[in-house]
Amino acid sequence: MPIWTLFGVKHGVATSPWPGKEDTDLQTGVLGMPKFRPDQCQENCRACADSCLSGAIGVASGRDGERLTLDYGKCIGCQLCTEICPAGALEKSSDWAFGVRKRSDLVWAEALASQPAQELTTKIQRCFGRSLHIRHVDAGSCNGCESELQALNNPYYNLHRLGIFFTPSPRFADLLLVTGSVTYAMREALLETYNAMPEPRWVMAMGTCAVSGGAAGGGYTCAHGLEGILPVEIYVPGCPPNPAAMIHALLMLLNRAAQHVERGHYAK
Image 1 (cartoon, helix red, strand yellow):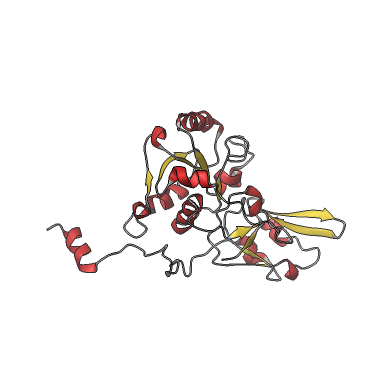
Image 2 (spheres, helix red, strand yellow; image 1 turned 180 degrees about the vertical axis):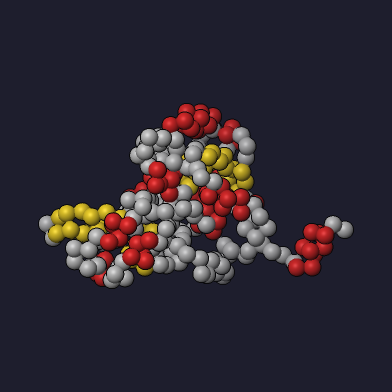
């Protein structure tokens, strides 16, 4: 008997029971996106905005003076803002499930919208059923997102148990999962992949680079991720997002999980 078979028999099932109806997400202690508490901001303080590497934090002028703007779609999770903020207005959190259907939901707003988050139509759910096939395209990634994607097929996360599979051919794919900042060199290949997919077809921007271009966005090699290139159904920021966040976003696409973020506010 091979040693790894013997090891598996001895230690039993390693697969996570999440997502189950009565199970926790098993992400205790996982570092997520910074939590924003604007009521604690000091007047005329720009420390966090000046330290933000990716431009996720900015300062806007209005009738009431200057105020911070926060776009989680640009955040790379470096945590510099939480370390430099003198008043604790930005603090570390375990908010990891940031997948959204509308790009605007990643931008922090003063008040929550009265409208509920957009739901997928019954037609989409009927087409996908309980199964989803994914074609992944690396459009200029540092391979951080790819490292986390590989974890989806390990014994712990075991993506196949949820009826979700990766396929090498776009002609068999329901979803185009894009990582990377979408460089000019990869744009044509990405469009050809999308055009080869049968209808209905959907697009997921995985990682901050695909959502907004990340730290390299607007440079000489790329624009701002998938913005203006392909219609995106699900946005998943993070540098990189962890495997549980990826699974949650995929289940959102299938209407098997609820969206946790609306207008930049995180709530389970």
